[in-house]
Structure formats: C-alpha cells, structure tokens
Image (cartoon, rainbow, N blue to C red):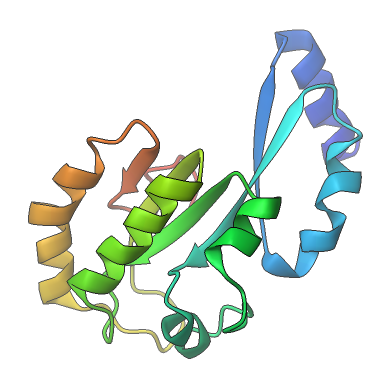
Length: 155
C-alpha cells in the first residue's frame, strides 16, 4: 500500500481532524492540490529556519531574499526556525520568533545539531538559547522548542 493511501486510511480510522506536513518552499504551488485528497484539514509548515533573508541565503535554504513572512503565511500555517548557528545572533533568533508568533498558528524553534554540512554550531549562542531564550519561547501556546533533533519524534 502506498504511504499516502495508508495515511488517509489512518485518518478515517482514528477520526483525525487536522494533519500537519512539513514542505519545502519549492513545492509551494502544489500544496493545495495535495491537500485536497485528504479527508481532514491539512496544514503545512515550512522549514524557513530564519526570517532574516541573509541568513537563509548563507544557509542555502532555496528561499530567496524577496520572500516575505507574509508571502509564507499565505501558504503555510506554521514554520520551523533554527537557533545556534555561527553567524546568527540572539537578536536574529528573537526577531524570527516574534514574526512567527505574530503571523503563524504554530512554530518550532530547533537548536542546531551538527550534521554532515559545513554549517557550524555556535556553542555560546546555543547556551544562551537553552538558558534564556527557550524558557521565554515555551510560554507561547503556539511554540515548540526542540533541543535535540529527536525531540519531535523523528531524526
């Protein structure tokens, strides 16, 4: 059985009302047609990582400088933000959080975990995030803070 068909079956069996998918910006024009096949409300979140376009370009997110938070909100109900990368500042993180809080139904802020890319973790910024920023962000009912890349149950 195909994965999508199995998901639809589980939705019906368990009476699921809302389903979330994470999608890359490249698929933005396909979201509506994909969602129409599901027997529930479908929501999308985008791994934009930051609303600072210069950081997105440096991180090679494939989301151009001209893409505004409002443009993202037209298509996505939630976003995933990233914290703790060299070149990023506490101000960068909190500005993105403020935008996400204002515009989106849901957002996650993920602490960067080193991986196979050349992106480097900023240990001091990560400490500030864990000790100062994450406790404040967690106060929002819209927010989810992920310290380990397995906190969402995947990874």
